[in-house]
Length: 126
Image (tube, rainbow, N blue to C red; front, side, top):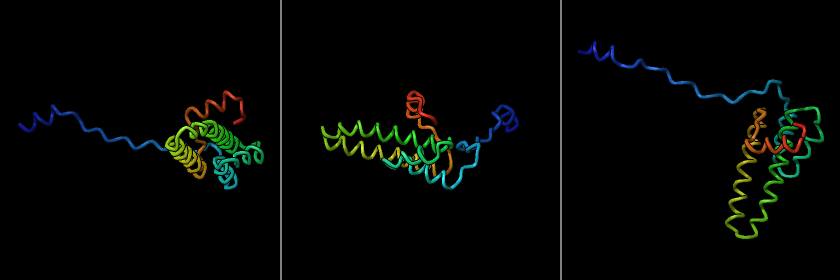
């Protein structure tokens, strides 16, 4: 009876390994990583754009940081309506910037969904 149960059962499939984030195709220097991190820290987003115009990594993180900063600056006007909206926007901005900082520190050219499309639409070099 156990032979029939074994032959009729579905073969076990090994679970897939979790997907790894894509590594940069070009090695990223420590200086570029630091500038990428600065790209998400408020007005410092200008530094990677100005200091490394030839680095796609720095341009990507600088322009995404600039769009994120401008987006949350415009949305901060909603904060005048209620303190709860201001608190929510602050936490959201901090969270998005933290993801960008972590990805830049790892040397990953991470493209934020939606934000990267805005960067491309504005025809910013990245």
